[in-house]
Each structure stands twice: as C-alpha cells, then as structure tokens.
Image: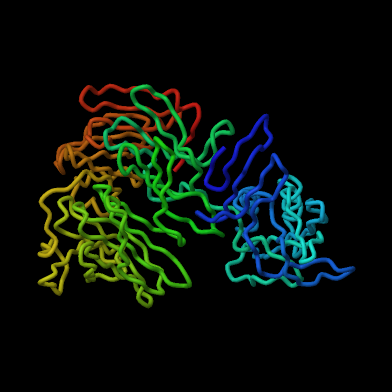
Length: 522
C-alpha cells in the first residue's frame, strides 16, 4: 500500500514489514517495523505534553512523544466527518467545543469528554466519532524511559474568531475551523478534461460511491473504455501537463500545507512544486507555465514556474490576500485581482519581466481576454458598461474597445474558458439569453466554435456568427470540448450517465463503464 501519507505492505489485512508515515509533504514522521514490533523512528516533539501526576496534569517534555500510531492526516480524515447541523448554520449559533481524552501507557485512548457542548446533538456526534476512530497510539515516555499517561484534545469550531487556547491543560492534536471541508471539487476546474492527445478523459466527480477510492479523479482510456482512479488522494483540481503527467493538489487538509505536485502516471512518481500552503493556481493554455500563490507568516507570494525546466521565480509579495484570474491565450500575461482599501483592482503581470499594469476600472464585476489575446475587457455591473484599456492611451470614458498596444499575440494554443453570460451577451445574439439565465459557454480555439449549454441542451455556434445556434444534444447538464474540437464529453441530465459526442458524424457513444461508478454534481 502506498499513499502520500503512508507507505508499507499488508498481508491478510495485517501490516507487515517496515511502514513509513508522513504528516507533512516529504517529512517522515514515524517509521515502524511491524515484523519486529519495533519503533524505528519518531519525529521529535520538543513542546510540552500534559502528563498525569496523581490527580494533576503537569506539563513535561518527553523523550518519546505521545502520538497517533499512523499519519495524523488519516486521523483528521476520520474527524472530517463531523458536520454542523443546518439549523445551527441558519441560526448562526457559533461555538468552539473541545474533545479531550487521555492516552494510557498501553497505547489506548480512554475517558473522552466534550466541553462547551452547544447542543443540537453535537456532543453525541463528536463522541461517536471518537469511539469509531482508530484507537492505536504510541504512549509517551519520560526521560527515564517510563510510560506516562498524556491528555490530548481536538477542537471543533463554527466560529472564525474563536480563541485557540483551551481553558484546561492538554496537548492539542489539531485545531481550527470545523473539520468538515467544503469538498475538493468546488474549484474552477471543469468536470471533464481531455489529455492533449485526446485519448484519455479525466473526470473530477463530486461524489464517489463506497466501492470507489474516495475523492480521486478518474481516468478513462477512450479506446479500451478502461477506467482507473489516479493513484493518490487529492483535494484540488487536476490538469494534464502532457499525456503522462498530471498537475494536482495532494490531500493534506487545512491543518497541514496544501501543496502543488506533479504526478507521473507510468511510475506514480510525485514531484512537489511547493512546500508552503498553496492556492489560487492557474495553468497556462500551453501547459508549460504555472502561476501560484503561497501563504506563509501572513504574507502572500506570487510565483511563476516554468514546468519544462522546473524553475520558479518569485514575482511579488504582499500582506493582502489576492487571487489569480486567467492567463492570456499566448501565456505571456497573467490577470489577477488584489484588494486596495475598500476597492478591488485588477492587474496584468508580464510573465517574462514581472512588470505589472493596473487596469483602470476598480471593482469590476468581470474581466476577460479577447480570443486573440490582444484586448482585455472589463465589465462593471452597476453601469452595465464594457470597458477596455490601452497602455499608451487611457481614455477618460471607457465606452468601446481600445487596442492594447503592449499585448499582441500571433498564435495561441486551444484554451477552455468559462465566460459569464452578462459579458458575452453584448457580442452574441441577444435572443440566446432571453429564455435562459443559467448558461455555460466553452470555446474551441482549434475549430473556432462555441459550445453553449443552456435549458438542458447543448448548442453549437460558429465563430460569433449571428446565425441561430444548432442544437446538438438534448438532456445535457455538463459538457466539455476535446482539444481538437472533434469530441464533446457530456453528462446526461436525466440518467446522469456520461457520453461522448462526435461532432463530425453527430454520433453519441455511452461510457457505461463509468456511469455506474460516479455521480457528477456541480
């Protein structure tokens, strides 16, 4: 068995031989030889543990720290099942509760207690999680080698401003906001992503059944229809870098760094791109450049990474939380937004020089690139105006399209981009949007076609033409182009099955081996 948090062999369900456990990326935390029953390595912990001394709990430093017998991430994974009742969310009942227990010299956790119970049945739920959790611990030992009893604790929150220190002595395992995550699939990635050669389809499901590996993307070989999950758990969107490499976010939860990594499918080799908490990453259309933000010590840093060479350059650093929007089609510029007082400003960053250009419109509702990458559009919902800017000339009224003199492109790779309805309604035929308010639009650069999904159907639109869109698929809820624009992967809104549509022949092929195992919800 091998995951990103533990590695070893099993025989008849029992762990045998040497096992390694990791709490953080590339950081060995625990090594146990199960054949010899020997603790080979345990990462030192110089903080204080609270040890029972008669009727008192006194702080002491231990020669062998008390810890979970495994990866802490797997223990957090279990307590992630904790959920706040919907009634508490509606009533905004904030709380900070503690689960305390003690680890005995025999390695068993006992005497669970829940403090600051807010009601609504949460105490029973927390206790149920404790009794169903793996109960294997490494007991602490003092300097004389004597086994001791340690008091441990876990915090459960529904409060962003709760104090982090408990009102009683204990060693804290992990704290923070409610362990229940929003889920790994609430990101900007599409549900279907074709490999560059269009021979494989990667699917990001929002829910997998009990027979499938939890929270993993699935890869379908479109020739053989074989399906397999990616070999490691992950908690973020996934992208093809080439036909055999995937950019993904390993699953390390919100209490340990969420990092970016590259997975090589033939060998399952993983290369980490960052060690700090990473978020808001954007991959360029040619899959050769990556922009990502790291967070450390209250500072947010923007990096540009050249994936072909493995080098990364720090572009800017600020104490303000900013987000990445999109790459220009040619991969030379990156659009981002950053707070400035009570306003949000948009910047364009030159990938090669690091130079930044500020767009003129503050608090724009939407910013996007023209299809050839030569123009940037800003949309402000309060005035319903479309604006663009020129680096050399900045008009006082932004009421038209102004060429950006410093941003010119001659060619670009295919890119899938989701445009907002309000932005495109000024260019596409107005009658497209009279009936439907919920619409997604995908553009195929290789065929210069638009794929529109609205009113439970999919339509083709040629090159911004004012001709009526052609309905090609009925009962369609999600759809995505292949890279060459010849295939469309989509989900049937009625039977929830996945299908492939061939544009040239107008033929539909069911991916029945997949439909029984996943359920896509967006």
